[in-house]
Length: 177
Figure 1 (cartoon, one colour):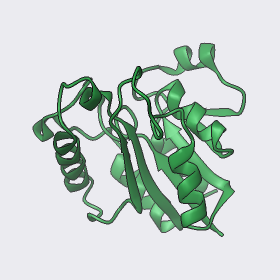
Figure 2 (cartoon, one colour):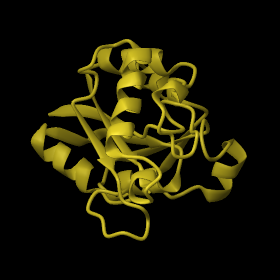
Figure 3 (cartoon, rainbow, N blue to C red):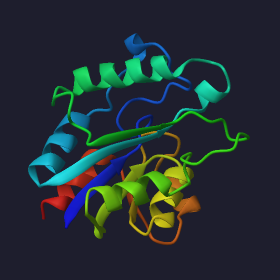
């Protein structure tokens, strides 16, 4: 059985700029590259799982989101094949959806497709919907304080089963121990 990290994009890997559509605006959160390199060296498969409601709201297109993802991969510098799969959920919160977090569907499908061991899988994100997606899929959930909420705000929202870390780098450092 394989192990994996499911990663939110905005607020976890890159600075959240609300409805980012221009690849020139992509900025990595400090430590992102080192975190992903460490996880990969430890044998974790990496998956990108991002809600992009700006598409459903008509603010930008799927092609814009994909261009931002390509720019993020360029900045990370670990290859275009860094992620085993990418799920972009384009729906706005009021639209019917199969994959929009907190839905666990993408995670569940990847667990089956890649023979993942849920006991060794983590969903990492900066919003409650990220955490709920992980918990709904029966995997571990990690909240990071590099996006929507700082540490104090997360402590007030703490969800049963959630782990809290300052950032992705702090979390992946624990994987090696």
